[in-house]
Amino acid sequence: MFARTKALLDLYVMHTQPRFLGPKEPIVTDSNIDSEATEALKREGVSKQEPNEQVE
Image 1 (cartoon, rainbow, N blue to C red):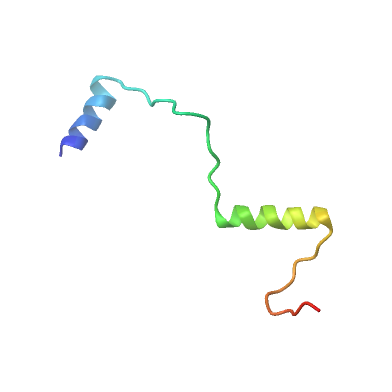
Image 2 (cartoon, helix red, strand yellow):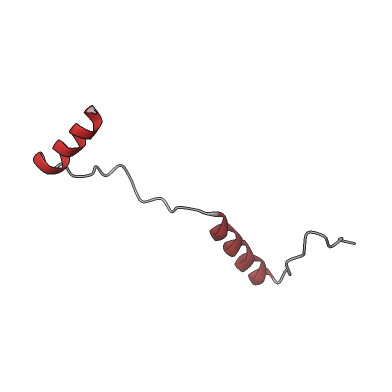
């Protein structure tokens, strides 16, 4: 209850602005990692192997 009241006071009464705590950090997801890894492999000329393929 107190947190909600404080949030409303900060937002509407005191007009508190967000604090800058440092540079923006990118949000990394699994799909971002997969696409970046695939692009890196393409640049190196390595083909992506299927998990069931055996390496000789």
